[in-house]
Image (cartoon, rainbow, N blue to C red):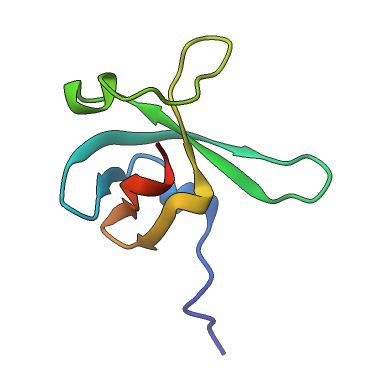
Length: 87
């Protein structure tokens, strides 16, 4: 029996990240996990849009923008995030 709630991390890579209002943030470039628990904690943004550049978001040491996975509300053709949860 296939579990429709499961998705593989490789399926998230390259997907476009948008807000509930449809504002495009960029694409999923990488995933950041908690080493001990394996919990997914951040999506690393690739090709950020000018809209996201104006937001004060957490960044990696290299300057890549991070989106907290806790802000993700849906995953399908796009990754939908609650913008109020990432500010």
